[in-house]
Image 1 (cartoon, rainbow, N blue to C red):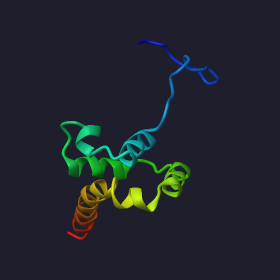
Image 2 (cartoon, one colour):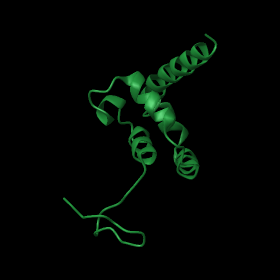
Image 3 (spheres, rainbow, N blue to C red):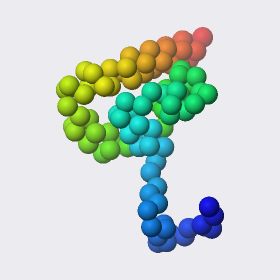
Length: 101
């Protein structure tokens, strides 16, 4: 579908929403979608490395974290937390050690 160039002040066609990659990715993670379903074919370490490179939308993230119940965090999102923590630690350790080499 080609809409041509949208100029400042132009409106998108009805039903089309534009969101940042940060919001799009995190909204899927908050719904419990695993990384391999969000970015098929991309290795999990790379997925989280790329995710950490995105500009954080603090307002969105705070709103989502405030909205999520403790039960959801402990059950539905537990898999994403476990999957996400190891690549994040690995990413930061690699960055730390490569800067001290």
